[in-house]
Length: 233
Length: 228
Image (cartoon, rainbow over all chains, first blue to last red; front, side, top):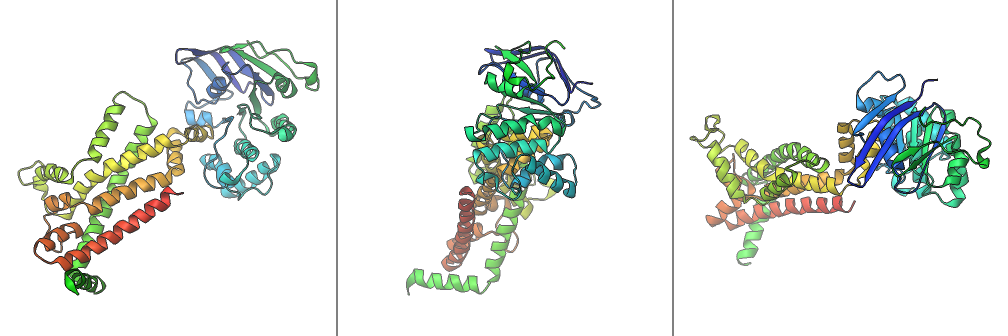
């Protein structure tokens, strides 16, 4: 199966004290990757590189079946949900419509996709709710829905449960674990090793700006049996 | 009733009677100010946005220049443009001096730095995640910048209104480039200056009341926007 994205010899330097180095990273379709490592290790930077928001000083990033060199068009294949997402002013529908309109999706299909996606994230009937009226957990779900509605090949989640209260954690993790069913490869970052083992089919370990080999999975993750090493693939 | 009382009564009679002189001065003010603020917004908004979003060598110099232009005395702008538009000036053959077009050009020079500077402030103060959010949802750099403008639209509108407030109340440019020609380039401010000097205090007062009303409406609108 053709990989969703391949990174090779990536090097990013931010200021004098931080650099990210990825020799090789290949992500396969419809899988969940946990990107783990301590704070400041480079998880968010790597996600931003994969989201094409940050240009590496060296290296190559290739998407499957890529026939365009237009950055905006390439970027439409991947969506990043930030740790503290920003919702545009207006309604939930306005937010979910934004990316769909950019892709030229017509009004009827937009409505159908928005309704279906809100149901996936457990926010049925939220279409007309104003972004400023939502709770922190609802903002997180709307941001996830806004990304998911675009059906990205690669969905990047930066510490998606960092702002979720413990009561909602389990349902949110269940939601994340089901995302590949909707056609996306998911990479989520976390500094919680147990969460990476619970959710990640494969674990990407990053330390001091270097991606090290995918760590072995713990016994908690025995339900997932599709693990494979991604480093140096 | 006394000097003030008589003058106020006459002023209201002129306003409520739709006096032709008053009407023409109000119309010329609104027309030139509206045209100039539209052009100033078309120039100032992109400049403010560009300066706010990009970091490059010379940016601080450009911002300092904008700040300086904001504080330019109106007569200095009038003087410089007079030199351009006068018969001996480089744009003299166009015959623009003492026409509404010259006034619009001058007022645009006054308003554009205000609009640019206030849009720059709005962009700088905007949530830094807006651009990246738009980009990651598939927007191009231009589309992301437009989305940023949508998010800070009240700040942008406040910038445009502040520019409008500056040009409708100015007298230097209107006087030097318009020439205060009756029924052509006479604005509320130049008419107030002229008529008062002729001893027509009531007429000046009538226009002053209209000008104050416009300024009040503009400021009320500005306050309403700033509270959103």
